[in-house]
Image 1 (tube, protein in one colour):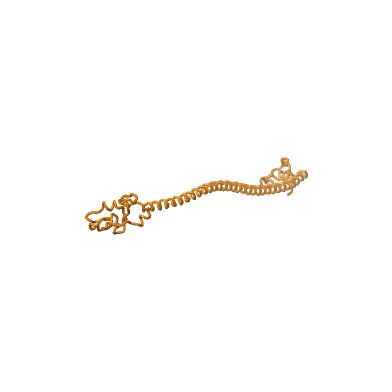
Image 2: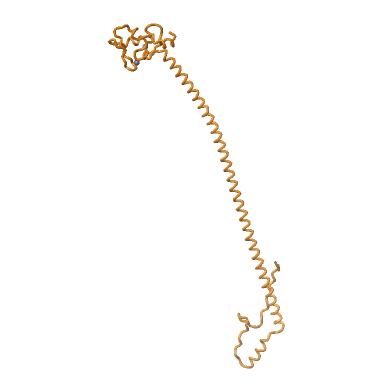
Length: 228
Ligand SMILES: [Zn+2]
Ligand SMILES: [Zn+2]
């Protein structure tokens, strides 16, 4: 770009003639012929003045060129400023995106920490659940053992009086006509009018005046299990 300093404005000397806004010399009033001749002579510019005008016109043209160049320069500067502003905006947007990204990373880190904490808790819970499962298995096993023991023990007792069978006559296990077993003592107590009613199914075993011992024989299976 052509760079040139602004020329110092040259203030022209006040012209001695009248110039209208249109630049034309003012119209002369009609006058007498003598006056007319004198004034016609006065409109002829002196040579020096004409030279000065020529110089001024040249200077004006030069100034106009300089003004044009300055305008160009200013336009370029504005354009550069605009480009620079655009670049700065891009950079700013980039920084804002970076900030967002940074925030996102921080959030992700926090989430990961929380997830790690959750996983720890989950593992602890899983461990506890496994322990509970093992305990439940043990519990189930013990319950089964207890049931088996109870079941086994039930074979050793009369279902009605809940007393252990024994070798003494009242404690001997006796089988009724229906197949149920009870101790001799309980059977004896349930005989009424030669009828022995089973407490479980209500079936009657006839005694018919015979000795009760014969009507309800010993249950040898139970007796053997009881070690009688
Ligand atoms: Zn029965
Ligand atoms: Zn009994």
